[in-house]
Length: 412
Image 1: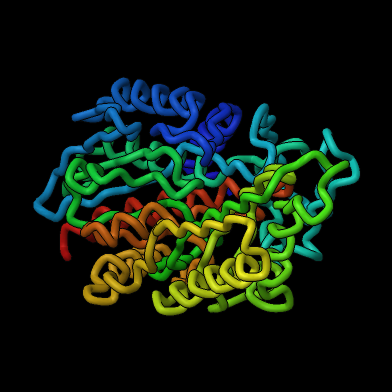
Image 2: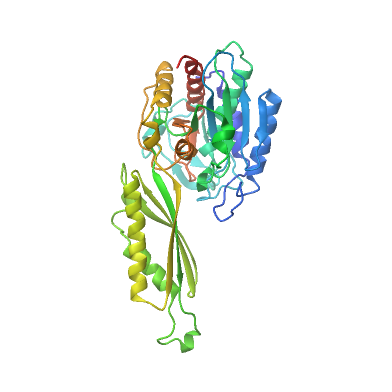
């Protein structure tokens, strides 16, 4: 089942995944964490060594590079993000390779109770004979999105070593902080210099995605009245009680991530910190439509106002910040980049799958900012948790699809 890209992709993902690079929403810098520079500096140096042109690390933390064209055609961008999700332990990742997967349950050396079973994950059952990469059980793997990084880098090396392949100019970008919604600087669309682009940040083979959530984040600050508890009667206002009331008043049986699927949106309380004098609750709001997203923000404001009205001595502030919007709004005006990716998949014998992303990509922001950027599969599965895994052969399929796409773009 080996093909020319398997070993390189395996080596790159194992090497990249072992480098700590998780992002941190609480830090305002770009990148948000110093450890992301370990990946960014490495990629800059590897691109320079392999002969890419215009290699730079921008002051906003993005590595950019060019693969010169060999034929007339549009400039096509390929992007992947270097940060890993902060929702689960992502420090000290120990990637491991399971060669020639036999179809059974997969256990993990650092957590023997953890099991990845094809009975619960049907896509895994399709990968008998594939070479799989997982972590060791106590961390996520980081294939989201270091698999994308490995694919773009493997594609770059192949094109630089294959001048006979007809393609237009290729631009590459490796971004930080995608997992916290800050991967696309206002400067990136101009600096990318691409007519259209693709993020390598999708799941199963065949996924060509052009629709994502629209997203806002919200911060609710509850300030109570603090006083010594021994003298608190009819004087103290406990911020913990009011914060809990806000969360409990929001819909529980509907409109939470664990109760929604398909095209349903949600309000998700992600963090609650503080004490009896002040509490801060962080939310993410998601919906596929802008009016649905606005309605969820208004519902959160109404709940905060109602709790405030019940306790006027407290101060409750609800602040909502935009993150990204459904890229469908812009891509459906010109589906050429999407159709090109679908055609490339079909040329590789793959049936394209286009389903709404219950999340977002750097492409969501880039598309909104004027660079049409649909999302292409990598093979990553069970992301953001200890069961995360990926097939090396799926990554190779993604690499071949991108190479085909680059060639087909010269005829578009």
